[in-house]
Image (cartoon, rainbow, N blue to C red):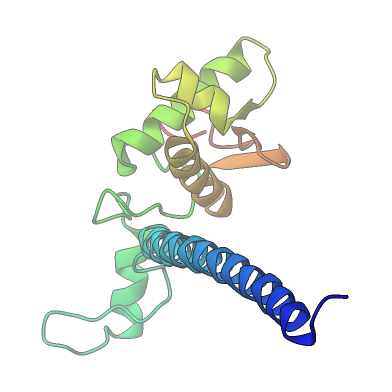
Length: 182
């Protein structure tokens, strides 16, 4: 018959093995957790930076300020907004109106409009941003596609493009030509 001390020693050895195994597993999980937390922080920073880049800059009607730090008088603000070259910076996209030329837009926006106008003239349907990226000879990677999508959505919001189906873009009805925009 085995002794009581011998039985206790066997159980102690089994318990020690289990504790060692659980410690190894805990160390492995801690290492995985550290990697996952680092990756999560990097994605959070990336999302924040993309949000900053995609945020609209100096939207119309958002309190423009003159050089002396004061808001323009009502007549001055209307004069500035009715000028044919409504966008002072080429990164801004003015709201489309009759007679507004594509030249008020940056080259990137003009390129998008030109590709979609050419496609419409050929009687082809709307384009996705992935198709635009491929047509422009860009790498079809998420960053490039999202940059195009942001520009296309901004053009839709300002009346230059239409989005008949989610993610598919075509020229808006009046803004079909590079010259006068009609």
